[in-house]
Length: 252
Image (spheres, rainbow, N blue to C red):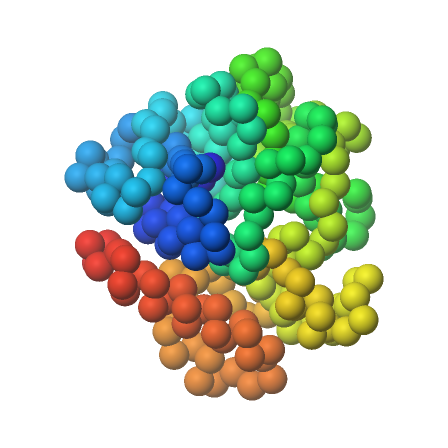
């Protein structure tokens, strides 16, 4: 399951869905995208044309955040609502899937499963870029109640679900979701080498850092003046841009 709040995130969902299928996920497993009903119907149609199940939902906006990019992030929490699916694998769409994730459907009982947020050194939390769970209106109601009285102004999806469930969830290893800037790090975790860690990564999330912003905010020649990057970092950005040109020509 994915979600989209505008044309850019619809494009990301189309690219993600293509990559998921390329890893071998069969068409018998639907790829569902929750879309804001504020998006024009002709833009939503691009999802359906790509074989994606588009489910329109009401936007859910956070009113007391400073960064406009995060105003509609709460819509992501609607993934917990019941829609007739026994189990859901949720992914942020601004990421690149390298390996098949279907085995996650067979994880045991837990309120949810998610990868350890290794990039937070001051707390033991899980990341919200990949979530595995059984949808439940009761779970969604818990997020609604928590968001009715947020404990701080900039209170995001990762904050609320960790406050609710970080002691009850099942943790996946770090290499299930690796932030893009970690590609340049020599981190091995439990692997024999950095190369093995990279080879075992399931998902790379395009995250701001090391002088790079979100994919769509970078000039496409940005790597011409950068030296010493892990080759895969440049390759992933270029793969995304090529996919955007191929699958989202309507965006420009």
